[in-house]
Length: 519
Image 1: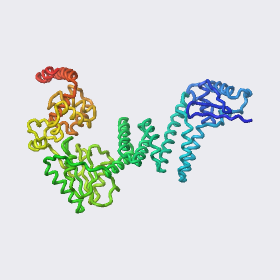
Image 2 (image 1 turned 30 degrees about the vertical axis):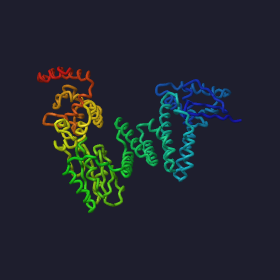
Image 3 (image 1 turned 120 degrees about the vertical axis):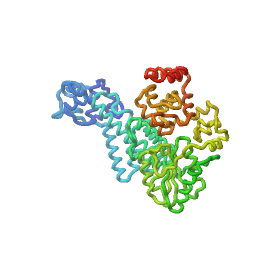
């Protein structure tokens, strides 16, 4: 009666003879068996290279092959060329039931069935392929062959799960795919396909905001690794933004809106022109907290033209007059900017974006500056004198009018979270230098590289202003919040450190003593 051999490699190596386990204690023998089971036929030299790498004598292979044959077939005659492990002209061959072969066969079958439109049958084959796995492929086996095969098989395992999830989406069973895709995204933060599939599944389940969060996580992980998300993933992100924009409610008007009459006149006239079939492209530009969103809400509140808040793409419109509003446009990627430019060519469409960065400004600018002193006093219902540190910024004016100093500084610090942590750290140290300082001051006290990048970010965000050779904080209240955000002991230590650095650089005595007095 023929012996029924079976080897399982999609997990720790497991060998059975007539359903009874066979133990192999020699690690080289286990690797050789796995190699032969997967490849079927191997030359002696390839066997040595695959198991041990270079510079190992062929005698090692002979020794372990002989030992493996004695273990598997105790009754085998010496120098016999047939049997389970057969000798060939150049090496050895093995025919055995192997789960790796079944895995590949099921994947190939699923691919054929899917192309033929038999999705349910393809799904069943993929589920059978996934069920073959018991852990990491070739777990615990050393050597170059095992390492390479393990990487390839584990990659195919992930791809199989992705194919399975994609078919579920095609069948309209997106809810069943979400748990598996969620685990895949967590385990493979740099692999884009499971993130794309999870975003689609969540969106189809009415969970678009969660899908956008999936993209945000993937984008952060990829960028941190120096990888730009591919076009398909960015395009899907754009499409979901469109969907969210269609269903999102307009930004409500503020209970109190002060000033901005010229800007309101421009935007209301542009909205009225849409009804005449005239489109346009406008961009509201201003520092954080200056009131860009409030201006848009006030200007568009009473227009009879449909307004979509968000970012749109070609094909999302039906040809009727419409207004598209894109807030936080400083975060727009190249795909979004390109789409916005193409939409600008559509007749009867008014595009309005709001950005704190001129780098993403597209269209005619509406520049928002500070409120005047009377407008600031009206907004806060308080005398202007105590609001001077806000320098006309509506957000800071309202915070100063309602919050105690500790709470005020805390709120402003929370508002600055749009800055990168390293730039915030640089600004906190810059706050110790006073309202006005030079780039050289910063370089002397905290070091140069990569200082310029952080200063550029602060300038672009409107936190700092370049004034000739000097830099200054646009708002004294921001400088104060950054300064107070440092623990007292750290502030004192940094003041002493700054005094030493400035003295060594030959700075004027009064600047050195200023820091010593606060140290």
